Image (cartoon, rainbow, N blue to C red):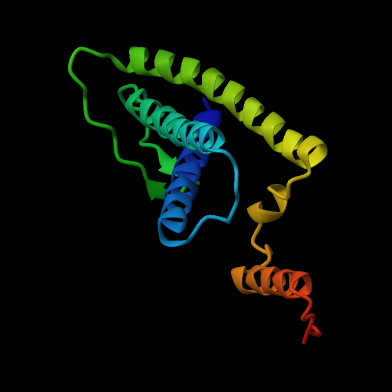
Length: 162
C-alpha cells in the first residue's frame, strides 16, 4: 500500500489542474474557428464529457478511500492532511473503488480517442487546430491584421506590413 499516498496525491493534483483549466476556460475566449454546426456540437459534447469523466474518476476515488483501523491518515505528498470523504447512503467504499476502476478505463479510452482526433487535425486535416492549443498561439490582433491585409490586397489597395 505504499503506492496509495502517491496515487491520491496525483489525483488531487489533477483535480487542481482541472479546476484551474475550467476557470481559465471561463475567463478567456476560445480560439476562432469556423467548423460546421454539427462539428461544434460534437466537440463541445466530447470535451464536456471528458471533464465530467475526469471529475467522476476523482470523486469516486475519493469516496472509495476508507483507511483501515489504526492506519495513519492519508497525506498529500507526505505533508498535507487529506480529509476523508463523507459516507454515502447504501454504497460501500468497495463499491466506489470498483466504479472508480471501471471509470478509469472508460476515461482512458476517451483520452485515446481525443489523441487520435488531435492527430487527425494535425496530420490529415492540417487546419491549424493544434496551433491554437498552446500558450504561444498567435494573438487575435495579429489574426485580424492579417485578415485586413488580405481584404486590402483583394481590393487592390495593398499596403506594407509594419
